[in-house]
Amino acid sequence: MGLMDGKSGLIFGVANDHSLAWHIADNLHREGAKLGFTHLPPPKMENRVRKLAEPIGAKCIVPCDVADEDSIAAAFHQARETMGPLDFFVHAIAFANRDALAEPFYKTSREDFLQAMHISAYSLVALCRIGLEHMREGASIVALTYFGSEKVIPGYNIMGVCKAALESSVRYLAAELGREKKIRVNAVSAGPVRTLSAMGVSGFSKMLDHYPEKAPLARNIEPDEVGKAGMYLLSDLSSGVTGEVHYVDAGYNIIGW
Ligand code: NAP
Image 1 (cartoon, rainbow, N blue to C red):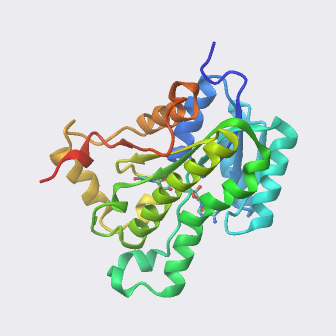
Image 2 (image 1 turned 90 degrees about the vertical axis):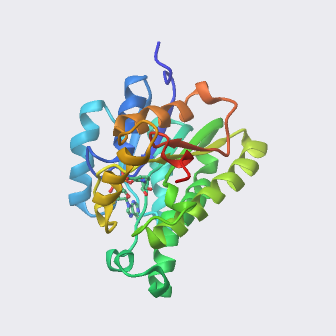
Image 3 (image 1 turned 90 degrees about the horizontal axis):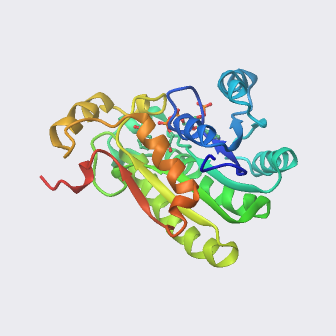
């Protein structure tokens, strides 16, 4: 018996096998979940995801740009057609203009600020709003965040502000969706992991060097540790947990010096 037997859900944010969403998907698959995946609309993005998702028996692989309401609606609709009402989804999406991330935060343009917020934070609200009718009562939602929401991390800049908005959205969504449909909403706050988006953060390699020096476990995290934590929050093991930001960072966030 797998922990996710009989459950099905949609994964937003797999770019390749380094993606944190992929590590969550892998754990969900091993525990028996049926999975659907989204990719950005261009066909070359589809091929990247298809190569990973087909071997684990993905039930659907659908285009979705979270900046586009119709695209979100179509993705949920297609997922429901093939898998029935969903038990979970994973939001592992972030985007900011690389040049904007490299500039001092105070120089962020209105356009770059709004674009980053739109794709990295508002998208969770949009997925919940549009996806709600396709979710089963008691479903679970997980988003991915980072400690730069709380403290200033050099180079994280606008993305830190987006993650603060995302984490606050998790709490408001948890409060409302719990009452409305017993749906839980949580976030995993991951330590730095080398992925495509992480490489857009200037000074990311310094973050990787810094964690082993400061974190209680004296190391960086393994991406599979994010995968296991995501699976826990999506499974009934965490049935009493909602609105939380769960750290998977080798303890880095508790250190004050
Ligand atoms: P990743 O593999 O690059 O995943 C980011 C995903 O977001 C990609 O699949 C990307 O698609 C997708 N995306 C960007 N814009 C989109 C849009 N408009 N519509 C739909 N999808 C879009 O990087 P990752 O590190 O695993 O990131 C996943 C999440 O973890 C992000 O929220 C990130 O902030 C968070 N996180 C990462 C770390 C870390 O150190 N890596 C630490 C803490 C939290 P394309 O590749 O096709 O553009």
